Amino acid sequence: MRRAVVLGGSIAGLLAARVLSGHAEEVLVVERDDIAASGAFGGARDPRPGVPQGTQMHALLEAGRRLLDNWFPGFTAELVAGGATSADTGRGVHSYLEGRRRVLVGGVEMVSATRPFLEAHLRRRVLALDNVRLVNGRVCGLRYAGGRVDGVRYARPDADADADPGSGSAPGSGAEDVLDSDLTVDATGRASRLGTWLREGGWPEPALRRMHVDLGYATALFRRPEGGHDAMLAQSLTTLPDGRLRLSTLGRVEGDRWIALTAGYADDRPGRGTEEFLLRCKQDPAAAFRRLAEDAEPIGEPVGYRHPDNRRRDFHLLDRFPAGLVAAGDSLASFNPVYGQGMSSAAMHAACLAAYLDTRPSPRDPAWPYFKRTRRVVDDAWQTSALNDLKLPHVTGPRPPGFTLASRLGDLVVRASVTDPVVHRRFLDVMHMLAPARTLMRPGTLLRAAAAVRRQGA
Ligand SMILES: Cc1cc2nc3c(=O)[nH]c(=O)nc-3n(C[C@H](O)[C@H](O)[C@H](O)COP(=O)(O)OP(=O)(O)OC[C@H]3O[C@@H](n4cnc5c(N)ncnc54)[C@H](O)[C@@H]3O)c2cc1C
Image (cartoon, rainbow, N blue to C red; front, top):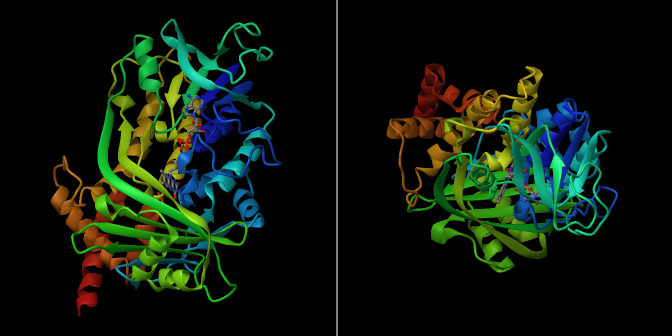
């Protein structure tokens, strides 16, 4: 390919750019935020408007971490050198269910850093690639020719600036420019307008599937006295009397700070203010959160975030689609964030793109093989998230066939993972996206889980 254009310069876009750099002479990443504006890391380390969830706690699961280390050797070590935490589940990650700490099992690593810090490091590594370049502008549509996408329409922040190299229009000729593109990757996130852009070109829109979960997050930063904290990362899941789940998470991040989050559904969504935040920490049955409320000093006010729904766009169900176009990251599917699957999913979509491009596909054919691969990734993450979300009393169906049995067996495995190290490890493999969710339904795992739960009862 002569040129590939990536729409959106966040995690999914940057990872797609990394993969494309091995297949195209030039890769342009079009991002509406001016992220190259300042700083040694190619942009500020503060949350930015285009990624509003950047204010919230983000942890990187093992599947994503391994892929990042593969594409950018030493990436985890670099984050840690900058002050982030990478903790092994056998030592530094404590997971609580209803206040009981799960038995520790090692071999899975989890990274805790603020989201802007992680993204800034990734951006620096991607933009260090010779043939990848950032273009500041807002994508407003696609150009079609002969059954394919052959260009990207975008508005530059300053329409009168000099013409962008490779752009189709002259300096100062208006607000919109066009970038020629042999392959376009939509990575503009969960609010992607790709459906509208397809419709404008006379193509069908993918169906948007939504599951309303009405989740509320609040994230706060803290300073803590040195010593006395036995976990670098802690998570606690509690069931409220009416069946709703409440999640608390805590992690050490760069700048000698701790980041903590409290999340709840519907009218249990966290409100504003430090006082309420600390109260929720004190109410948590896991000691790690009570200790945080006692010994830590808040830095600023907590920041809230609302996640109304999980959503996915089923491109694989379309009967027509233009060649030269794919979608990745949240634009394909955005899950309940409590499972932390988003960045690892984006990395797995990039791996699907790499595998697809390695087959040397014809530029005249739609990328169905890519969507077939990503469908498996999306289905699996969706199953983990949706199966649990559908158990929530306020989440309405439709519940898939076999839901009641699957959900009971799932509960059995989750309960067993508190005390049985083998079941816990298999559970971790699924939660960290290293193994498909169905592996937990294997007879061997279920029998072992049943025995472990019987022993707990005894
Ligand atoms: C509250 C919350 C907590 C989360 N916690 C975790 C976690 O712990 N672990 C985890 O792995 N994931 C987590 N996620 C998910 C994670 O944030 C995303 O999955 C991840 O950022 C990948 O997103 P993306 O790159 O596809 O889209 P985004 O990060 O949303 O980025 C989209 C990019 O496209 C740009 N853009 C949009 N429109 C245009 C346009 N028209 N023109 C040009 N640029 C455009 C935006 O400015 C932005 O840079 C969480 C999400 C939420 C909401």
